[in-house]
Image (cartoon, rainbow, N blue to C red):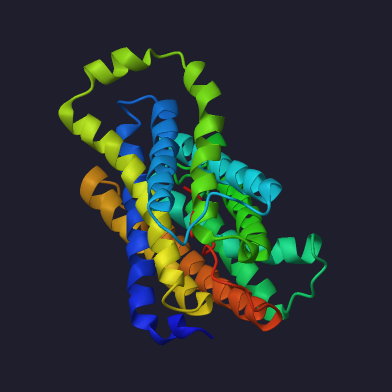
Length: 311
């Protein structure tokens, strides 16, 4: 292990900061979605991401725009954009805490992907964690919860997208500079968002002209929060092993719940609390097992940490 593993406390703090930043991004998106067209928020989120990373790489002597795996970058960027698009739309209908908890079943879905796609043997403990995560999800979206409807398909689809995203990242990102990968995530998302922005039924100029200073500031913060979260993830991985960090990514659920209550007045009910806690426990355990087993098989170079939530 490199010197990075000797600073686990710093890595954990950075991971918690990244999780909190992602929760703030989701909360801001949920609030602002009532006033600003979603496609504009989505495009700005990726455009600022690409601009910040381009500047970062441009002024750094040890970083490069050159990628060794353009198809990997294209597929990874498309998955990230797809997950973000579903998140930006889905957060208009679902509370932040419940949304976050459902999406963070991704490590549990990775177990299913490993069995179906990679034909890996799955232990009884892993199947038990998958069942627990499913039970937690059903507790949140149960009939009568107010969340039972077509909108719950969006966080479920996002969780599957995130699972594919994490498997792809963990397999191929060791062969890429993490800052290069982060740049292509932004530029691909920016390009993919353009057709949706152009086809938007709302006039972008009129929307911006009518927006209040607060809404404009929050709109700008969406790009900064998305970019900052990914940079914090990279920095965290440079300080401590992934197996140490990933369970702390579930701090995002706690922060999302708090911010949703403080900023939006949305607090989970008792059954939703039960589901959130179960998903957090099962998901964090499964994430730790996934990374531990992967570390036994691979000796990767520094890489982009699998994102807790695709955003």
